Length: 275
Image (tube, rainbow, N blue to C red; front, side, top):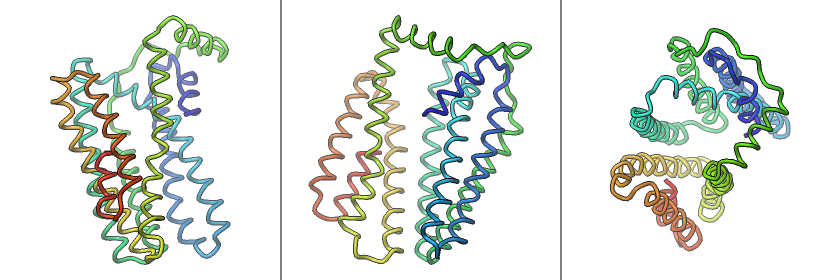
């Protein structure tokens, strides 16, 4: 989040975003590609493994944060306002289909490859997919704004303009507050999987735990893909507020299922509502 905020100021006024996106994406892919090597080399040295893994993943996340908003701006330049919702909806749907396929691949790998080589292979395939995206991005044409780089504002002035917008625009202020609360509530998403492992799979073999985690990932991806299609039609009749109410109801039901589900098959319903 901090790196995304910095990137807003750092590249404000730049007519081209592509070169910055490629630069930071390269470091993100590089550090993600290092994760399988770390998992294989240091699997017998847990302390060194954790330190190396956390460091590489942290650098990858910083690089991703610096590139994420640049990607969104590039996407905004390509699309007209009338086409943007449809394209974003299709993109989101295809992302979830890819998640389903990757979940299936993870299930196969965890069922047939032993630790730590299963994790190494999974991270390697993930990094390879990222590199494929990076190569496609290199050959993507960009809409250039202006003829040169506009002088960057001092950081203090940038903050002052942001504060002024928050003071003057009530709707934007409420949007920021909602996004903050939304980000906080998303912290529970990973804990659903942890709770499943601790409550129902604590004493089973590691490979079986990985297998059920992959099943949960597939269910989550399938639910998100289905909901992204259905919500597009529902919003035509219910409006955006109706869609938010449905999302809140699903979040509430996911919490109830996580608390009261007595057996593992019923606990999978949690991932349906989360999706």
